[in-house]
Length: 116
Image (cartoon, rainbow, N blue to C red; front, side, top):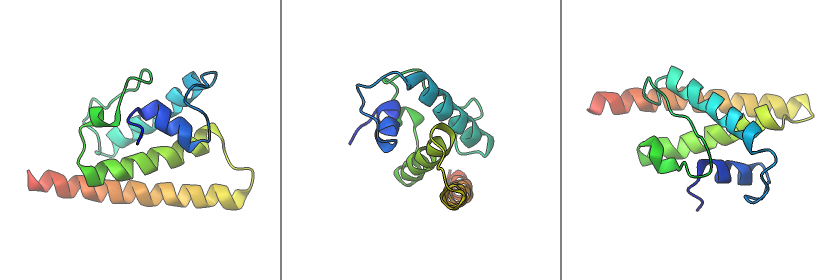
């Protein structure tokens, strides 16, 4: 499995890792989603920012259950931001999925915080 946040997100968008013309656009979307994760308490207050393909998922320092959901959330949100669906039905489905991930991530982060 690809460990690079940028490369794996590009793969989820159907782009080859070696194809770089949209990297800046995708990085902006990824960092926007990471800022949202910091605001809802999933990432530390300082958040995290991806600069290039060298930034890996492990750099986020999340538990395995949390990391799996964070990956899925980022993929869905970047898809909507970078390459929005052309039908309102599909857009609504992505938005509902993102909302569910946000809720579950917030609950899991609160649960994990109480374990410490």
